[in-house]
Length: 331
Image 1 (spheres, rainbow, N blue to C red):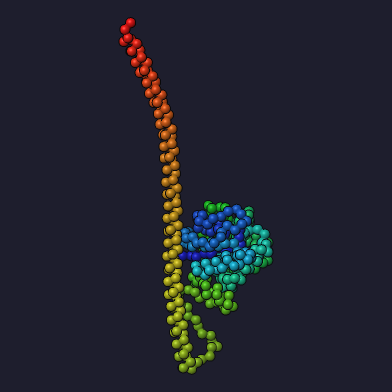
Image 2 (image 1 turned 60 degrees about the vertical axis):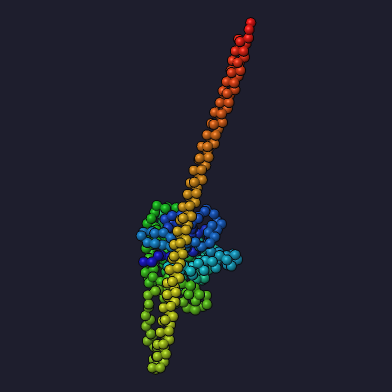
């Protein structure tokens, strides 16, 4: 299968970056124990997990501030429309489900439209706070609105304990749920067209796969005369041609995006390597400098001792000369 593209969405502090790191099996996304927003811009990282290539897109925390509405929100939307994800992980922490979290989730679902529900999985973080209690027991006691949200997302949910990095089963289990969802959606993914049709109030088309789908006509569809049928056929052929062109453009854009992503990844790896090499060179130079400083101090000490010996020798020579002169004088 092609690369899995996974987007992390949720309010700030929900654990999106930490979940991305857990899923990737490394720490490309910066995390911190803070209530302040850590992730300031969308970013994507690629890794191979269970012999499958995945692209994980981390996003800034979703909120209702005016700055978010005008700047970050649009950046998130543009980034998602560009990368065309197979699945969204709606990240929610285990604990009390507040009105703020309810509003955040509902705003996300409203922004991307009903079509996004088919691509959504709820990912609960802070799984360690369950204290070995089954997630199903927790969900029986949660706020009714959270139950509705899970229902909207097709009863799909998963739990991560981001503190337990050794538990690979939680990663494999999530990937299986993601792959099952992708197969259910016939390998379709969320597109910019779906988003735009949601914003304009039009009903989005479900098909965004590269494979052609044949739509059967409705049984109550009226029959047209030969002339009308011919016009319809011409119109269908025209639309089919336009669709093929659109698909070629889409494939071309996707190929360019993959190449650009690989270039960025390679450049980042080179930069990290160069930084590491520079750091090693600096440390090596610092060690050499310390050695030279020690050698300089030692040389100075030896020079002082040598100067003292030279002075002593000169004094001895003068004394010897005086004695010799005295001895050579007649008595």
